[in-house]
Image 1 (cartoon, helix red, strand yellow):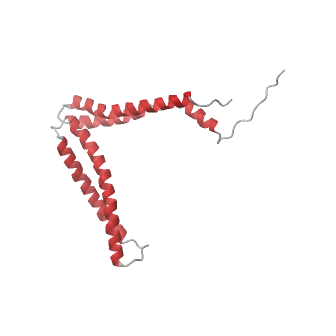
Image 2 (cartoon, rainbow, N blue to C red):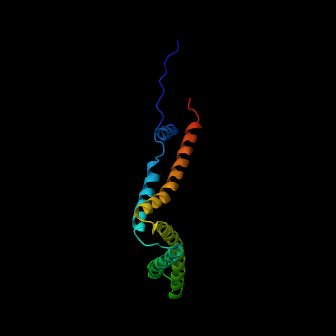
Length: 169
């Protein structure tokens, strides 16, 4: 008769525990859909009560706001680099380094701010002039549909990972 052999519990670093946690916690579909959807409802509520805001004005305003933000960062970054006490360099080199680093940082900030402001203002321009209810519907669809797509892909990948996980014993 075969005896029951009690096995040792795997250590905490064993991949069994990560697999067990992954299997017990499927990806949430609520958070990726609800957060952008609620943001879209708020943007749609505000935009729906305002007169139409054309897309061309949204892009121009995004350029303007990004340029202002990058200009402020250029001035602050240039002054911080110029007055850096850890650099013991001549004035001419400090001036060149502060201008160069200020331009580089301002360029990166401009690109990031343009995409951020552009996304927000484009979203707002699609919701304006429609009335409050239709604006909220359009805003929530603009935010919720990509979130639902992302949640669906994440769940599909989790399901495939569960199906193809190797058996331990």
